[in-house]
Length: 334
Image (tube, rainbow, N blue to C red; front, side, top):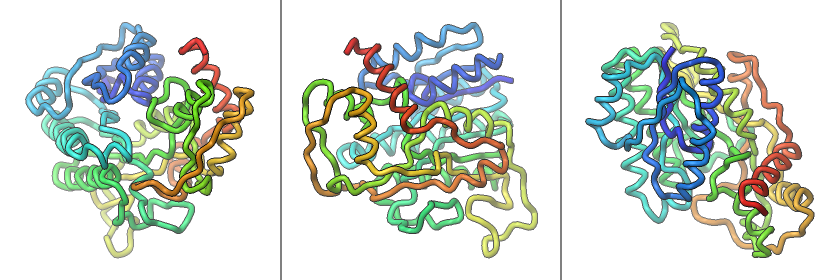
């Protein structure tokens, strides 16, 4: 079995590569090592994957010819597509980066799968697609037609693009809506990293919506286990499915979408308290209004994923925060 993992130097991508190579699979990783955040962290993640079954190819998935050549040369069995321009707030500042990576790049991956008989494409969507939805927990049976950021809109677009390719070309595709992933080797633009760094540096942390926010924090170990398990669950056509009666997360095409989260949101202030307790330092806090593109709550209904994989997240927030803080202090000598 040969896998392509895009975003292989990323937070989730590098952890997926580690898991696949440990299982003995051959893995080709793709990453453009861009400077959206510290490239040294990306290289450090890659240093952990010194495995004979792993080969990194540095390219931009928005490069149509390079992606096509890679697929033709390698002939992948499965693709786990995690590369994307991440971040809700950055999408407000630099929208074109999201069009290039999340739309053009996603199309190039779909084309590679189409022309090279890939058996299964698993790709990263996001809980942000739920946008203005107020009903909780968020279910894949819900409408996701009202995103509140361009980032979310590109992720919803990825799902639509995948469905069209599943329908037209019989490519099995599975989208995973990630819910607030955190843990060792995490991204510096995400709240756990920002809070930990600022508290240790004695800086003030910003608390959005005056602390009245809820997040379904999900540890990266649980996310990776879910990804690797769902890669083995190849969606099939459902001849009796109809738009009127069926879930939007399934189809008459070989297409599926799942939530992948912890399924137990906690208040933002409780998460901050967990970091404070682990560091032994009380944070200086600046309470402010809700920020553009932000949502009040995320909460994953993961029953569908459990039914097909038998897996539910195991890492508690207390244990996950302790693990992250220990990694941060060791990595940055704090």
